[in-house]
Amino acid sequence: MPRITQPHDAAWSADVEAAVATFGNRSRNEILRFLTAKGPATRGDIVAAVSAGEPSVAKHLAALEEAGVVIVDVEPGRRHGRSPRYSANAVRIKELLDAHLSYLLEK
Image (tube, rainbow, N blue to C red; front, side):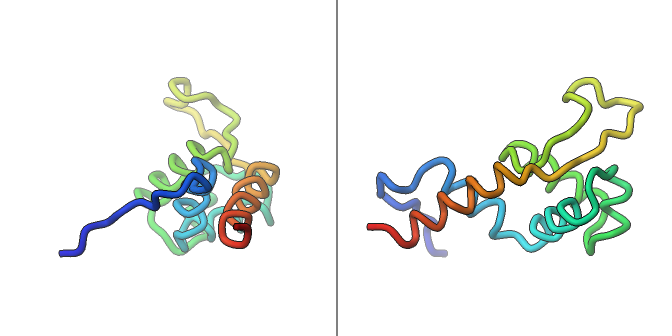
């Protein structure tokens, strides 16, 4: 089996890594597109709108929140019994896309 390697390039920043992880996944893109178009939504709303099941959406939302491209109105640890609403963070999305574009096009 081939070995997965990481680029040994100073231009490969944490933001480039986050961009590849975030935008290189179709489900995550679908979730972000839904949140951008429809505004704040609960996880149930997102599951109903995208082509992924609840466990998958939950996993992707956690990754998107960690990357900063999704904002949640209830902080972690206080969500039990609540329905947090998720929103796209357009500023962070643009930051990650700009970082990735710069990595790809600039020397």
